[in-house]
Amino acid sequence: MGGIRLKPMSQPMRTKWKFFLTSLIALGALFIPSLPTFAETASPSPSPTPSASQVVSPSPSPSASPTPSPTASAPPVINPAPAFDINKASSQAVVVNKIRPLKPITYKPRDLVYYNGVALARVTSDSLVKLAFGMKKAGAGTLRLNSGYRAYSTQSFIYKDRVARLGLKAGEALAARPGYSEHQTGLAADVSAVGQGCVIQVCFGSTKAGKWIAANAWQYGFIVRYPNGKTPITGYQYEPWHLRFVGIEIATDMRAKKISVLETYWGLPAAPTYLY
Ligand SMILES: [Zn+2]
View 1: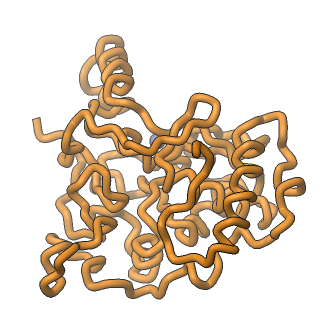
View 2 (view 1 turned 30 degrees about the vertical axis):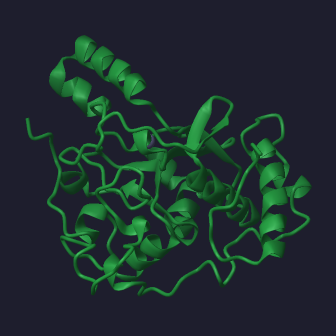
């Protein structure tokens, strides 16, 4: 069926159905501006925050430790966890930056879910719904999704337009090259909060929602991908609105280790600029 489906995790069926139903209600309300009070209408089960079973211990499998070759550190594994493959475009652990283009460069996620024209990978949308519930419950505001998956062709159009109008340097500061954008993975979401302003602006980090997200996104498997002061490593200015889904296990481990950027976490080189 075409509705929201849970990612294949080990939750009891009862919880699955409960989440399935609340997700359906939440998604409808979440991304439709005309239903700002979704939290009230959709909270027959006021437990959208991660349950104990969803929050993993701060030290997960050895393969999640920050080594240059994350899949090589573990003892012989017949079927390496795809979640921790940082090279595969379809992996939720994939690292994309200015020196690590997607492979294949025209990659498109298979399981896109659309909301009012904005798409996310299913695993991202499932988790973003939970985050939105948590944010609402905490009184930090109503989440709004501004941008998600961007196709290679879309990014190509944006990139060429910016570079044509502004020149190579200024254009590239605004738009990633096609194949180099995290948005192409379906794992990135640009968010804001209804009525709090600072939409896709640095000041979002100072809003109630922005502060709550910075402090709590990890519980839902998200990181603020381009933190303040890390531009020399990430290659991007501070973007408090740009969330990247990496999964609860990695997000929790990064927090425990006080590491804010993926490049450092995985022992990868800094990616301040493109190589050519
Ligand atoms: Zn973004």
